Every structure is written in structure tokens, then in C-alpha cells.
Length: 167
Image 1: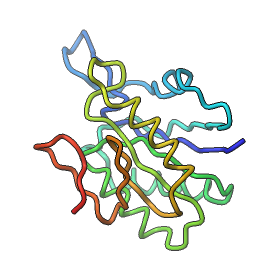
Image 2: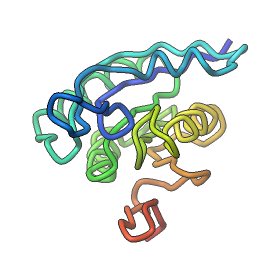
Image 3: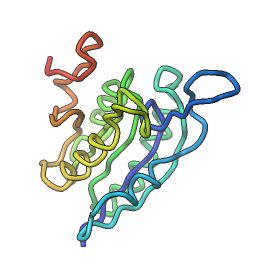
């Protein structure tokens, strides 16, 4: 049984529609509900809800909190997947890459352009692909989105194409 840690930080993947305000917003974690929909017979996913923020609102203190949680889990020797807002995902990934020079496991960051549960959401696909990538890629920090795996040092968000590209 392969253990994978999943850290939830919020972002679009976890946004919900608020009827009161008429906008989508980060209010509560919902990744666990979607994990239960997946068939993962030989994987044990242990999830941690760290925060529920839009990535544009993430601060240096928030990134330090992510780093501290990752540091605590790295000693366990299991891959780590982090759900994160796409706007500053690369920034957090590069921060983690600088913080952990000699990784023994992969750290995967993923998210969504459209919230989980919304029609046309890419969230479940990205989450599923991230869990697979965490088991297959070499140690390092990666962005996994839309069927692609990017080393974080070579990834950037292309807002016009609504995806990530190498560059």
C-alpha cells in the first residue's frame, strides 16, 4: 500500500458558489469528498486541510506554513500532493524547491481552473493525475495540470490558454 499525503491550501479547486454573495469563494475544504469517488485500491491518501485561501491572497507567512507542514511530512518518506490556487502555484513551488534541496520524494502541486463540482471542472482530473504522478516521478517539485507534468522551475501559467506551459 502506497501512502500519499495530500495538503489542501484552497484555491479554485475548492471554491464553492455562495448564493448570498453571488460569487465563488473559498469557504470549506471539499477534496475529501472527491477522493472518495476515486478507485485507489493500493493507495492510502492521508489528507490535511491547512488553509482555504485564494492563491492571490497567500502571504509569505502562508507559504512558510506550507513549508513547515511539508517539512514535517518529508520525514515519513511518502510523496506529497498540494492542492493550490493556480495564480501563485509556481511561486509556492519554487519556494518549496529552494527550501528542500535534497528531496527523497516528489512534491506535486495541482489545482483547477474551474472549481470541483462545476460543469467542465478540471479539478478531479488534475487531482487524479497528481496522485498518479506522485507515485511515478523522480524526487523534486512539480506542477501537474491537464495531463502534463512540469518541473516547477520550468512551469508558468498561460492565462490566455487557461493552462500551464513550459517556460
